[in-house]
Length: 334
Image (cartoon, rainbow, N blue to C red; front, side, top):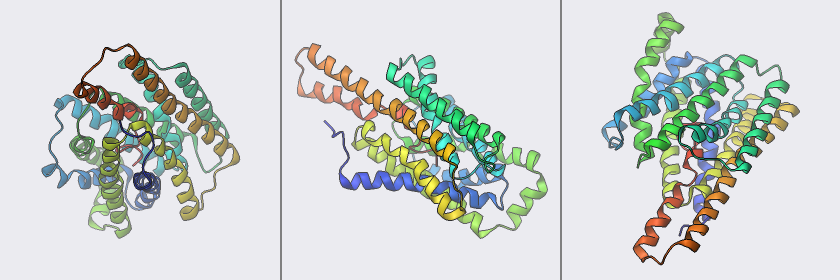
């Protein structure tokens, strides 16, 4: 049975991925300085999908699910996040608010997949929602309300994508990232031309800014492909309950990076609400682990003797216990 704790090397890799995902919001902020947000998302996914789509096999799930995951987890989430940051959402506060996707996933899964949450998880949802409200009410002048609401909408889109992905159960998360990402470039390029204007698109394309190109490369190659590749390999080797808690380092890394690189200093109220939000996320993730452990123990005590092969089969799903709450493990927060 896989260990419930990570070896030092894999813990370092999980921490590295979380830091890359946190710093990624600084890269997004840099790119948005010279590229319109919808065009920037389209550029990111062109880099994510090509040439990787010719190297990574298509997910073994129906096309309609691939497209739906792409619409919610990639197009909807990132378009809303980039527009929110373009309108003034701080780079450090964005990954913190996005963590609400974990709480929303718990609620949506209970309705769509009939995955009944525990009382502890529901308490975590309430605490996290209260923390989000504290952030909204006590936000400083650097965090306007509309961008904050757009990030919450992005978390909602991400959570819906999580539920669809949970239903689809792809065997390779990286292939899903690449192939579902094909949904993004053309619609967002069209929306960019309509909403941001041909002149802005033409200027960004004909006079590319090296900093923006570097930012797009960081978001595509390091945050999406490398980050998710490492994260998926960790989930393949260890229980998700040992890996997923590292996602709570993403907003910590994001806030620290924004403070060092951009001089963003969160208010005391924002920090208090953020801690409440992360406490709710921790309850949603870790109490799910406790429930699954109890279910496995009950099954062990009541089941008839089985062969070694059957034991291996029954233990296999352990690594996937909380993957529905592992939204940061790839498309999201990256």
